[in-house]
Image (cartoon, rainbow, N blue to C red; front, top):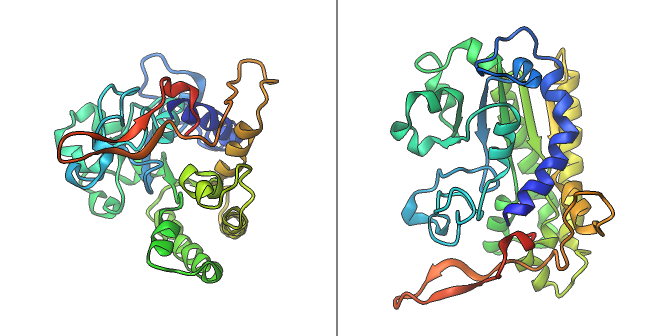
Length: 304
């Protein structure tokens, strides 16, 4: 759960830290005691995506992420994050020297200082330009774009066929291109896009295929998606003066953790990495208040 985020986020951030801090220069830091990377890194972060980056955009009555056991590690109570603790957005914000993100949904309840640094919202950036954010704000910002599999889950839940996924993937990539171009056209100079993680290793999917090693057709389709996305990013970078777009490799970050046998000093090894800590319908209780889920004794010992 929370330890999952710490492990794979540290891996993926290493992969693109040079991208974040290499080309943005001469911008004054707002930190009182800035780390060198904070002096030259983005000053704001705009986040577009699903549950892997969402800090609470879903309304309380619409999602179990506002129920226990979500949030028990951080911030100590449910906050709308689909995790017991921090998510990748929180870790990236910390790396950039920014405060923990607040969702767009709750922006009106935030103090001005917090809103100034980071806001996580989905599709209203254009409406805020001129009223809240200036062209300078956008040019010194980072956009994080996440697609973590919800589109595919929705597709399959509506009786979409496995054979139809490649065509569906092309539609997703085409729309992603439109979205990335739109964000860049607004003036955002740095845009990070996440690759899909190995969906075939997620407990409720891997159980359905009765496998323990993640070798399913689902992961083959994930690789297809990721290859198309990387090709798109390469094309977009050829059209810009600098390497504006970069991918965050969730896929190999996850696999690195799965394969860790404890040889890496200071690393955490999971005995059963494909076994979830929260089993059943996490966060759901029946009409009598009885939990429809079970929890492991120590969340930090579980990857999922």
